[in-house]
Image (tube, rainbow, N blue to C red; front, side):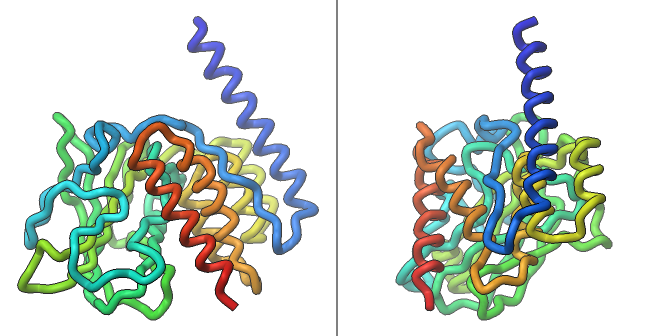
Length: 270
């Protein structure tokens, strides 16, 4: 009964947050973005939250072992400012309402054009099955994005997936690859959020609504679409950093620190 009351209270609070965000969105300027409020501040399901190292599924072409969230395993030289970092939660499964979501990561200043994206579906006995893999061409931007193509079967609601980005530093030495991983889960669109989104085409307002409703991936995608002299997405990433850094889990703390390093580096740029 206590758990039921908690969920009822949580659901009501979330509806109020969405409604409040909608009201505030009417007065938002191009420099304001609501903070990210996760729906489930718990560890990722399966082996991802079980220890200080992150589980990495076997890759068909290149062997791999456990790595941390920043994925450093040598090769590609040393990053001068930041490491390969997925812009997503580490302490809990990041949520999305999209069955073909956009995945975002931050590239270090290292010389390699070989990037590989992999998507795995969680299964029984904490196993992950490869469902999609794509070789990507690196652009000059530090922010890299990849949207799951419509030609590929969409993600299933309430199913947990793991996604991985790999920098293939030396084709002859797989051990030098750099890897970063995160989890994602598709959630059902709350009616209140759907109604609020239908009232605004503005990317900043939509990003704020998604952030308040706990849908990280959608909020980040919308914030990256905002045209502004100040990168709005940095506000969102900083709010996630503030959630991750105090975590008792070492991996989440490292992710929070790395996210803050990215924010600091980007805001220093002229």
